[in-house]
Amino acid sequence: MMRHCWSRARMNPRGLKPAARRSVELSLIVAAMGALAGCGSLSAAPGRTAGQEADGPWWMQETALTRDGKLDLKSQPWWPQAAALAVGESFTVPDGSGSGVMLIRREALTRGNRRFEAIVWIIDDDADGSTRSGGDVDSDCYVVDWDCDGVVDRMVDYIDNDGDDDADEMDIRYFTNGELRSVWCGIDLDDDNHMWDLEAYEYSHNFFRSDPYGNEMIYMNKFDPERGEWVPISECPFAFWDTDGDGYSEITIRISASPLSFDPSTDPDYANDAARYRGQWQPDMQHMGVSNVRYSFDVDNLSGPEFPLHYDFGFNLVGSVPYQVSGMRHYNPRRRPPQVTCVIPHDKLRRWSDHYPARETGFSWHENHDDTIAIGDAPDPKLDFRWEGVFWIWERRFMENTGGPNQKYNVRREWSGKPSKIRELYYSPVDRRLHLYGAEEGWIQIGHFSGLGEIGEVRMFDTNDNGFFDRWEVYLGDSVLPVRVSTICDDVQPRMKFDYDAVCRLHNEQVIPAALEAGRKLAQAMVAVRAFDVPDGLTRAAQEGPPAYRRYAQDVAVELHYQDLRRHYLERANAVLRNAKMNDLRTLNAKQRAGGVNSQTAWQLVRVLEKLDVAYGQGDTDAAIGLLQELETIKKLFD
Image (cartoon, rainbow, N blue to C red; front, side, top):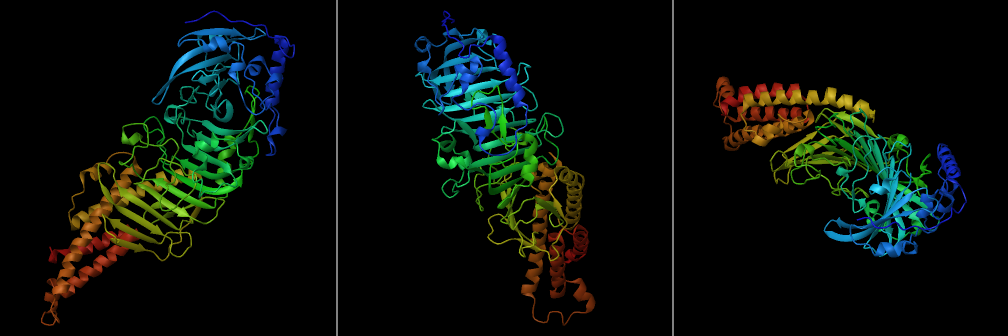
């Protein structure tokens, strides 16, 4: 219910008439158009720091902070009336100059399982009368006091930069005991009027309902109470690119900002630690660096309405460089002080990440889904993707600031401990896949997709340290020994400097079609030798879904079929060899030796299987099919 209007007389501190104030605001907007470069002290940039709101327009003055970022509602003349409100009641307050009207109301809020009441102070920055209908989301600011104790907890500020009545930027400021600690910023680069999803006037922690789609950027800054300024911290930024203009992102990058001196042994996930970015200011925060870059891509071009957030692979880059990038000081004259935030610009971030000096590199390729974990926001497995992309897992090789949640199964992991400033890939004919050049080791745990259980694991190694995998080990079930080991001598392949468009073309136009055809031919040749009952789930997975997923299921089915075939005929050959009497060939003529079951034909079967294992293991499809045809002739003696 709306209660009476509470009014007061308050002079404009600068004595400016409305026209003069508009002139000042216009000059600020013009100043914002100047390009900012360099990475020195933020105080060198234009704009106001905390405590300088008195030099701004009326709405900026209303929410003035102290230099160290404090905001006390109990000092407001209207506070006693606000404290007396019941839930659902409200009243309006005109500003002293008469330029706008503010709304004070009491609300019942829910945050998770917690229910509480809050005083919400709404400031109509553009004086469009929005507070008369409860406020809008283009140029209004919401100051929120949880528990109605006069202590500010959150501030949500919608900023319309171009005057089109929808927000282009959005701040969610977090206070602790009335002291400003951090801010989540959003920039709506595709102008779809969608940024943060809120619950109780803060980020709901469900970014699926926010905007990881299209062109977008979010980032966090930490408030420095000593200088009254923002510094980068945590996810700064998380950025998204829609490369084909369909409204869905194909590339995403997350930068982890941490103090250059942070210790990963005590702070393994510093950039995701709320105790850090919402905690007390620490001296080491004056020297922030980039400690991790997560860089993910949609390679098969499926990201769209049917497969949103469909990222195929990503780099996880760990290093330590100062957070200093040209243009990182983002000044907005319509932002409440501090007006300068710190973030690597969206139009520079991809190139900067391409050359990030990584101390070590993780490479993750999403081959299929993992039924053991729900990582997305939809019950349909084909929609079970992370908006953050494809990134590393805290297993086998620790990499700090990696984050989660993640898939364990059906994601290929490759790791390099070699420092690098560029990312390079290569194609291996052994498994017909793209790999990270320089990776020393890799693995993929197979199973738990399409209703299947655990199947096994493939491990990859670079045994001669030349940057290419030359040894593959295949494990099935709970066997402690590999069922297949494949090595190659001439393992050097052409390298390609990472280029997104080139990788997409190579993968989609050459790698996947060739792999599907090779798998089909191998399966057909093996069926002619020995039939195999492929598990139903695997059969379905090889026939449904995206081509890359079908290829993965086909690879697994072919491997299981191959192992069954090889084991079957080795058992028969070995049984003959174990039971053969000494000199068993002496009494046989040539026709009998070649046409019967004896040590000679058993050994011939072993030799064909050995050659087949080499050809199959090295990815030589034609040679493997030829040997399967040869095996088809010999095996008739043993079946």
